Length: 137
Image (cartoon, rainbow, N blue to C red):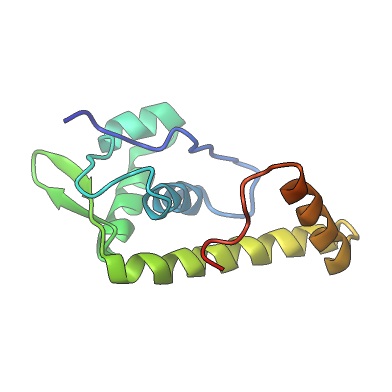
């Protein structure tokens, strides 16, 4: 089985969010969105560290935290694999949605935009045929 890792992982060294948290969030998002499925093998620690040009210890920390949180499991000598707990997916998806929304609204407010303007922009994006915002309501 070929290892899979979300291609959209991008590390922003200037972000207030620590690098390990950026990587962890990207992998979690790929799992929650279905881009990574039950049993998919993640890239090895070394491969992902090289790809992202970060210290392998950062990837070790990410994989360990994802394992503790129940998103992945390890098989010695084989690597890390996705674990899906259907009861947890919806709860974690909602939690991540709320975190991302809070960050977005905070940044928009910091730029001087009101919630009304933010809602108008989201409405415009939706009316132009963008992906739906709501997931089940």
